[in-house]
Amino acid sequence: MTKLLIVDDSKFSQKITRSFLDRYLDDVTFDFADDGQAGLEKFDAWHPDYIIVDLLMPKLRGQDMIKQVKLSDPDARVIVLSADVQHHVREEVESLGVLTFVNKPLDDKKARELGTLIGKSSRG
Image 1: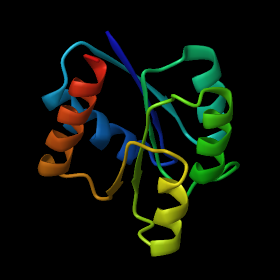
Image 2: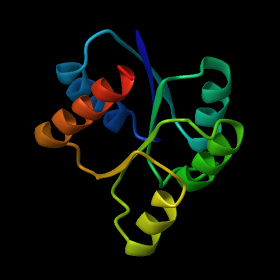
Image 3: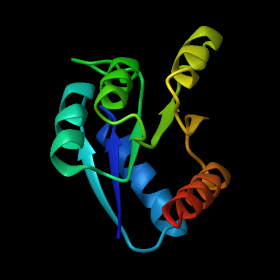
Image 4: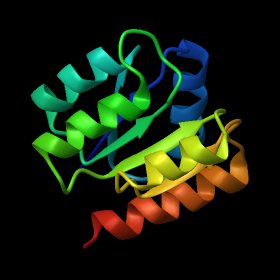
């Protein structure tokens, strides 16, 4: 069973992300957090296999959440799903060791690629 935490301040985005990924992943459990602070707390308590993080959120930005997650678990598998496509932001996030950076909106093609990435990583 793969545990996947979706951290996004938009409930709509959470539902869309889950809906798309459900098509391409088997045997997965989802949990959700509405901001970076809640995401960090859920990460510490639940230890998900993957975290999908938005960057623009209240309380704790995605970048800051990723930094804290990586401090506590350098091997944490983080995927960024964000509408923030500024070049310097993308470089900053990629320097944190994320698996990939996906631009919103999520669509079928991007979801299939994420499903493949998560499926391959989950198996070893």
